[in-house]
Image (cartoon, rainbow, N blue to C red; front, side, top):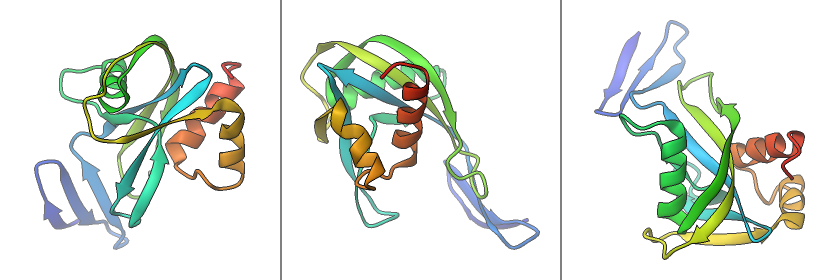
Length: 158
């Protein structure tokens, strides 16, 4: 393999077939499909990879010495000000296994309380009856959101 870039968090190289491969030193993240007062909590964030804002579930990378569920609860609170009451694991998503080792853990949560959020991020509460339509029409395309929605629906949580 030929190294192209090496940082504290990533190594980018080409493999034997000359494909680009991204090796993430912290490859796990967690997102939360959080329901608050009958609405789904989503965040809008600009993503430089596609040059536009996306609608996503609150989430983050799993830090060293932190479990996936701890990361999910922490980031839900930091990004939205929402405190998870009941939270359960839905499964995991491997969004781009053809060139990355990244794994995302998906959680479903109902909210027990709300505080003042600590991050400057646009939080939107979307009525559940609109979520499926946003996915069906392509208004929402983020793979982790769609995957978490599908698992929540298939498991009878919605």
